[in-house]
Amino acid sequence: MDSNQVLVNSAIEQLRARWPGAQDSVAAAAVRLEDGQILTSVSFDNFNAAATMCPEAGAVAQAYTLGKRVIASACVTNGTQEGTYQVLAPCGICQERLAVWGPDVLAAVPGPEGTNTWDMLPLRALNPYYWATSFTADGHWPSTTEHGE
Ligand SMILES: [Zn+2]
Image (cartoon, rainbow, N blue to C red):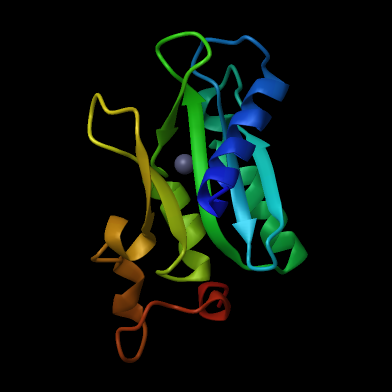
């Protein structure tokens, strides 16, 4: 099976494990590390919306904690029909989180409306005018180390 499909399937499995049978707007994510390991996490919901976190946040923080590079990310939520799902593109904040590992990090994005397909695109395609390149000497995408400075 294609490694990207494995990643999406991991997010779906996490979603269904955490909220079996749920049809509301919960979501889960999976990230693949450069060594092939997959980490998963779920959205953190809270009565206070300011305390919520995107599904990717947990897995991204875990990768960073481990000192490992994320090379791909996928986020899913329930589809409109029971048992289906849909891929969600990373929000702007999650794109910022993933940007720590460079413009080649792949992110799952939904396909054309009504197709129930998805694709993997590098961050540079999602964000061709990445703002942080304005703060590096030669306009390059900041490295992981530079992101932490
Ligand atoms: Zn997000």
